[in-house]
Length: 218
Image (cartoon, rainbow, N blue to C red):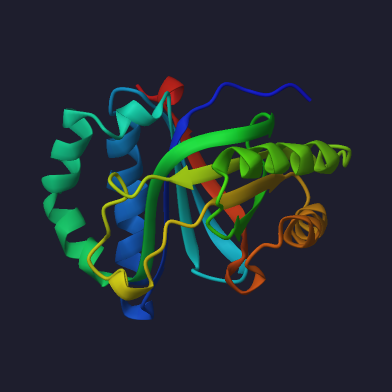
């Protein structure tokens, strides 16, 4: 499969307490996703719910380049949240917020199921990216494979959310696999975990709940 153009990505995963869940989902679905997709340079935002592992909720925000998340406009939005955001953000449980470059792209598009595999921080980032591209090529032989890529977080852009555990905060690369079939996604994660010596205890699989692209905005 041909490699696709490199982009920037914002990755946000978190749990939420049961009493806050309805408001959390309403905030995401009725305000936050559209607000972020309307920002210049943001391509799309997608929400996912865990089918295995944790945290329970995941959001992936694609941008034309990493510079979108380094812009003055994005920094202003992050530092000046809406009233609803100010209410919800402190209630997110054990959140992980990472912004970084996307590399090792194999395939294209979005799958119904997403596997997230944290990796050890490498001595040679380029070698890791090359290896992930190689693994993606092998995974692409499965007809249910859609897309795989490596997210390499940038510490200076990945500002923590209020409840993130700063003592456990590490900029681990994330290998992400998107598939059209739940079983295929599970098998792909198992294969990648062994091939990349991934951090299996922190891996998770998710199902897509909904996605909004900038092209769909009215």
